[in-house]
Image 1 (cartoon, each protein chain N blue to C red):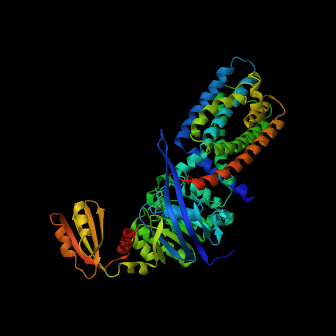
Image 2: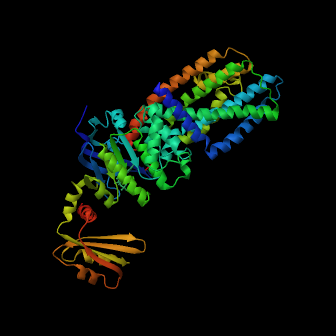
Image 3: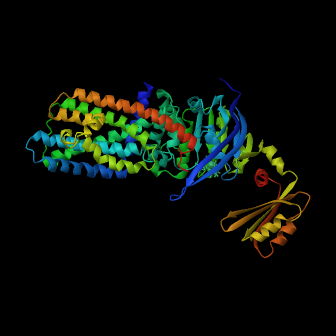
Amino acid sequence: MSAVRTLGIGTLMHAKHLSRSSFEIALALIIPLVQATLAVYLFRAGDEPHRLLEAAVGAGLMGVWSSVLFGSGGAIQNQRWQGTLEMIMLAPRRPVLVVLPITAATALTGTYALLATLLWGRLIYGIRLDFAHPLRFLAAALACVAGLGMFGLLLASTFVLIRNANALANPLDYPIWLLSGMLVPISVLPSWTAPIAAVLPTTWGARALREATSGGPVWPSIGICLAISTACLILGAFLLTSFERRARAAGTLALS
Amino acid sequence: MDSEYAIEAEGLRRVYRTRTGWIRPRRETVEAVRGVDLTVRRGELFGLLGPNGAGKTTTIKMLNTLLIPTAGTARIRGFDVVRETREVRRRIGYVFGGDRGLYDRLSALDNLRYFAELYAVPAREQRHRIAELLELVGLTGRERERVEGYSRGMRQRLHIARGLLHRPEVLFLDEPSIGVDPVAARELRRTVADLAANGTTVLLTTHYMAEADELCDRIAVIADGRIQALGTPAQLRRRADGRRVVEVEAYGVPATALTALRDLPGVRETALEERGALQLLTVQSDAGVDVQGDVLRELAGVRLGRVNSREPTLEDAYVAIVNAA
Ligand SMILES: Nc1ncnc2c1ncn2[C@@H]1O[C@H](COP(=O)(O)OP(=O)(O)OP(=O)(O)O)[C@@H](O)[C@H]1O
Ligand SMILES: [Mg+2]
């Protein structure tokens, strides 16, 4: 119970801290607008109204993904730069309990991109927000945020182990959109991508959102998304513990 | 497990391996701490003094679990800092000097809320504890402002409040008074003394000798990664017994004059400290020998200010110990 409280308060505080960064604010204002536009112009050709909404949702999810990729990938390095890494690692807690709130916060602030994309889509392009299953859409969105937060932990813990990991984030941004079918259906991609897509939690999250938008079972996709994310969480927690140990041995918790 | 000692260290060593250069990386090793033994009793206020780069921060970080020692062992309240990390962390607080290490875009209150939760302060005590600490460090009324708008000293006081949130039994203070104004520094000293009086063990590093002299039960002087002297302030001061100190204010003492001074009969130590445009030259000599005349003769041609002769202080003893290292 106390762990849940710690996660909750930690996520809230990190989300607050993140959302007050002027860089983040600038991005948050511009990106959803671009994404809504992208969604509309890529899919205006199709006449089905649902396709447009689907595209807007997919574009919004891309925003969540970017926030998680860049925020979580650089989470530990950012804490190091701020000089807070030592202070949070000094807590008498498992490292996962300390870092998960940070990556969850990047997913939470990323949700803003999803909402804003839908809003811009509605206001500027008149996309009608009639979801096939509004409540399931909400559940799917929550699952996406939770799942991406957990997936973010795996990113955070692998990226610290790699030198110049920031350079790695850029080339990952775009392929994952594509592979997970956020923008175009996976069925149009070459078949060798299918196994990769199948193990990405983003694929199942995107699918759950799409099913809730245009009709479909939703729950199985949510379930698979959360299951894969939980596996990522466990693996990430394991890697973090070994990172902590190594960083204490190498003296790299602080900038020197 | 209960131990009479709050801190025990045996043969602590720490080597840093660094890589420098991009094109042709060179590996370098720095031996920051080369065998430190110390024990600190419960409730004791222990000072760690030493010049820049002596290994004070490194020693503290090995004791507070942030660094794994290259060799040697350490225990906090009987718990091993490498094997029983979580038990150690529950019992320690860490405050370091400087203005980093806080969440700048959060308020002081949010910073404290976050760390209270992280450091496992029971939920129903948090609010009261935070209010109490804000009062203690004099930030009440400003707690809802973002930390990015805080002055250096205010940040430092927030650091201190954070370090105390979970009522640590052992407190590590690494230059806690850096950037703190004189009045606040005096309050900080009183706070630290009160904590120790109430049973908290404190390990303090500082560059202010008067602070160490006033606060510490015992002091270790560390230089080159080794403890060079250890004792009560009175015992350390006695190292300079039988000496006399001449202080000269000067402008532009040439290096040659400084070496010449060192070779004067009876002279034990010389130190030159820059104070803005002014330099403060300190010459320690055997008490039996009056070196003032000789010193002034060597400084002929140098513009001088006040000259005075006095009894040695803890600082002079410290200089003697560090110079001998
Ligand atoms: N992370 C690090 N990597 C490499 N070398 C380091 C690192 N941290 C400290 N050192 C080196 O170890 C030595 C001891 O440093 P340390 O910070 O412990 O000194 P200190 O006594 O705290 O000094 P100061 O009074 O300046 O704070 C120095 O030579 C320093 O350059
Ligand atoms: Mg230091």
